[in-house]
Amino acid sequence: MEEIINKVANSVLEVFDLEDYYPTGVRVQIDISQWLIEGFLLKEKDFREQLNNQDWSQYQNQYVAVSCSTDAILPKWAIVLLTMHLAPYAKKIINGSLEDLDSVMYGELLPKIDYSVYKDKPVIIKGCSRKPVPMQAYVLAAQYLQPYARSIMYGEACSAVPLYKSSKK
Image (tube, rainbow, N blue to C red; front, side):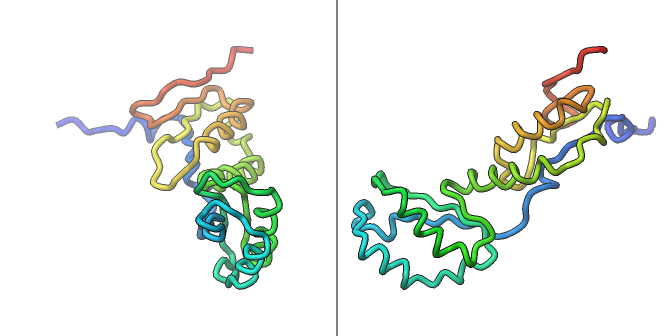
């Protein structure tokens, strides 16, 4: 019987796995509609009172995405006021979804990586992940890798989709 050889493991192909850079920490979504009358109407006095009575310490060291699940028309100051209450506790606060939150965090993290280790190498951006890596992270990673990599593919080594190949200089 012939020995099975793992050609992927023996290749020069570099795998860039965004999951390796996934920021750790608890992420929570806060829906501002819970403090609105019937989920739609903001009455300033009641809104401020409810925010003042909230225990914000429960968000200590957490990443928080603030949004509104209803079609309420909110004044911009409402989310900013909510942010003022959260700021002493939360690690990061954004206006948007949990995916938006992850996109922001990857947007801060990816520029800090040393991509020169991928200089003139074929790179595959790993496509499958167990963590919720947002599409924006893949978009950013491709942009940061392109000036360095000889080629860029997406997916898994057994079924990669070619995305980029540098021109011979």
